[in-house]
Amino acid sequence: MNRKGNRKTLVTAGIVLAIALLAVSLFVLGTDHQGENVGETSENAETPKDSEITANFEPTEVPTSPNTSTPTALDIMNRYNANLRPSATDDSYRTTYEVFVYSFCDSDGDRIGDLQGLISKLDYINDGNDDTSDDLGMTAIWLMPIMPSTTYHKYDVVDYCAIDPQYGTLDDFKELVEEAHKRGVAIYIDFVMNHTSAKHEWFEKACQGDEKYRNYYHFQKEKATGYAKAPGTGGDDAWYYECRFWDQMPDLNLNNPDVRQEFERITDFWLELGVDGFRLDAVKEYESDQKEVNVEILKWFADYVKSKKEDAYIVGECWTGADTYDAYVESGIDSTFAFAFSQAEGYIAKAVNQGNAPMYAKHLQESIDGPRSYNENAIPAPFYTNHDNARSAGYYTGENDLAKTKMGWALSLTMTGNSFLYYGEELGMGGSGDDENKRQAFRWSADENTEGMATALKAKKTIKNKYGSLEEQEKDGDSLYHFVKQVLKIRNASEVIRHGDYTYLEDVSGKEYCVIQKDFQGKRQYLVYNLAVGSQTLDLTEVCKDAKVFGIATALQEDIAWENGELVLPGYTLVVLE
Ligand code: CA
Image (cartoon, rainbow, N blue to C red):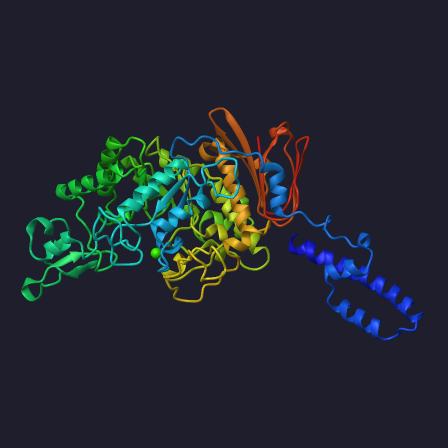
């Protein structure tokens, strides 16, 4: 019984009770027992309880189940999506869950997330059973850094061939890989080659004057921007080393063959453990803003990885505009993240906030053609938010903010390529400003003390969580969680959505809604998005009169209508026709 149903029952019960009261009063007035009974009944009238009502009056007059309750968005989506099943995934056009292990799930009570905690929640991410619907159905996991480090975020690596003790052991990692693979889930690890920790033995040896290790980094005699003074040096003997992000993160010299050999050894180590891919941190800083050099470094890495594991997936973080990040896949890495569609200022959030469908529709094919103009095998890597970005629930305010948050994910998760979803976004967790705020504990429960809650990382300000915890949202058919899960279900069932080329059908689109045709290997689907609160009526007789509904994702509680080429599309809804 949902909340609305409850309210309706109470109202109905109240009316029945009032009528009954009148009858009782009339009856009582006709007897000698005036007063007491009426008083007692009046008290009951203020706090009507189902049991009392049915005990006092004819049960047939009181509806005990709300058979007239409004269907939830989930009820409506289930009418169309219930029979969808994932299509085979044997390539890297996947749906990837980005996990910050530290804040995901704690297994041993120290409130720091760990690998065993993650293993215990694999069934939430994907239970490996196509017939169940209580998992997200993700087909890959990107683990933010898991190697020993001095920081909570672990982007400063102290040892590239181990697991940070806060997270567990190599045996835990092996178990994670095995359990993920059983479920058809690939494991990608964050791979930080731009810099080490200042506590890494290479850097410590370099600072002790070891020539070999000094050449692992960029040391020079001159002070410069982005450089810090080497510890233990000073005066005329002062040396400076490059450290673009932080003085505890010295930048490596990836042009040094010895450094490359180290990383080849490290790559072998992780491939042998069964990892399926690498997310490369900060690729445009390898040699800061020297694109040609960085592309050559990435080519060395891609060639090496693919020579060892042909289908390993490599995605680079090149935080720039599309012209630049597209060019980086010339190196042979599969992907660079599609920043143009991400964050509050990206195409998706702008389209949703402005109710401007062309803002999204017009740029879609660029996300494929851009990288493919440099590498015909490139895989687009759309994402909407990550651990460095404000969380998406904060992009929308005022009326319909929940519906807009939902549609942002509908736009992101129906894009071609390997699509990324940052943990907790399916709940609309809050977080902006300092990095810690964007990386808070996954909200398994509203109660912070619930077992598994990984709350060790403190936010720098009070985080406003507009929407409920998983426990709460699971019970609410109108929640963001259920909406995102239905979009994932549609994505995972459709090879066309994951792989297809786009055609924006401008003639049948409007300002607030758009029709996108997607084609893959002779199969065709139409994706129709409404970014307005009001419903739209579309005449698609010339486009796909005989198509069937493949799936829908609706943010509101209204059904669609599709007949003879006419589509009535409720507000904030995605319909997929085929
Ligand atoms: Ca722990």
